[in-house]
Image (cartoon, rainbow, N blue to C red; front, side):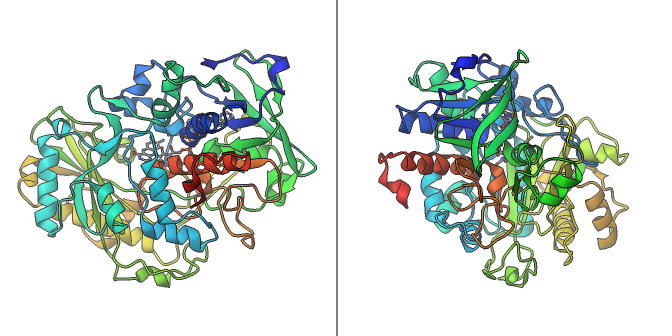
Length: 545
Ligand SMILES: Cc1cc2nc3c(=O)[nH]c(=O)nc-3n(C[C@H](O)[C@H](O)[C@H](O)COP(=O)(O)OP(=O)(O)OC[C@H]3O[C@@H](n4cnc5c(N)ncnc54)[C@H](O)[C@@H]3O)c2cc1C
């Protein structure tokens, strides 16, 4: 059961403490308590439980969660929210579009020192996930999406892909193609198959017995305590306001997400010496990479008003997408940024543009620029699958109530690759809009509007309207021993500290080509296997792969 109470005499009871009951945290809590039935595990989650909470569980309600009580509301100048504070983390908040990573993504990770994170292993981990994942159910496929897919295929002469994940599994990637997304959900009741639903709810329902697992909700970890280069305990504030220091016997696993794990580390004095000293935070462990390498999938948007209302059946209003290749074959060998492709791995002709379609006026960002929001609208959102701009997260105060600065630095790559990708995506979207049957739905282009035509105009519009796809990653990146910016090694252990690992989106060394959730779930699975193996678990020899 989840609890909001922990008594003072329980603080030394646990073998493992997991900080954050989010996407990766739920996987680790469930697996570790399964693999090590004689060890006691405590998961500490800042938000409430999602159990029986239909506002969270109903996938179609996802947009209503943004900016609400269950959102940390981390702002950048351009993007006001999108970080879930609830059991299941972002998987309780997101659109649950589910993609396996590409073989190329895994090759890049391995080339950066992430030994053991190859494609074969990642596929095995994803095969082992408990989430219910399948392409949008036929009864949720509405006519405008069907027409859009058809027009994409004919206008651009690309295939319709029946199951994107099957294609990735079999060929290692997606090249050019269009189709319905795979989604982690139950098509019968429209409920999420989030990390908490798939991994924790069977325990909460009593279907699976885990007497060795305690899930403490509405409890905030405020500090990581280090002595003799060893993480000894964490300070926690319970919902009641009571403060406790919890000291695990074996290990602490940080799973607070790409923003909050590094925020917590910085507030605890673990991070770049200079930043900490400037803020008067005592430096406990100098680790220059904490908060650097902030990755995301920036996306832009093009919107049309429709002649008629959209048919109501849908999974979550963004049911389909398209992949395209813009650059010449193997163009990635010429990337100059040493963070991104130092070994010059060729990328063949794998997709380098992606667009989601939105069957709603997704107008948060167009409205900000003064565009009107029609009642019935359809959007395409070109994004940059492997962006070359990187940002950083840093503290501006030692006061823990002050939110960290999220500086995404979109479109700052010196080669202009990211901007060129968005411009190409906007132009392709217009080609698709000229093609029947999709074009018959359209009344007018709302944003950017027909007066925006040249590459320069599209570039300016595309950058001004750009926003996050809510995929922050990379801020505590995994990497080789000799990479001074790496925060964790290939076993997710924090450099220079004992008894602590990180397992969340922060460990991505580079951005996956596709939406990252399945990769984060796989990180949770692999973390649980590695931690359990260290404690003598021999249940699955495949974990050695
Ligand atoms: C709106 C939205 C839509 C998205 N859509 C998709 C999509 O369709 N497909 C896809 O693949 N990806 C999507 N993503 C991204 C994906 O959901 C995330 O990359 C992934 O879930 C991150 O998992 P995580 O384990 O790193 O962090 P999280 O899931 O964020 O988990 C972190 C947890 O730690 C808790 N926490 C934080 N600080 C503390 C603390 N100090 N003490 C205790 N607990 C703490 C948080 O409350 C949270 O529950 C989306 C994200 C959002 C926000």
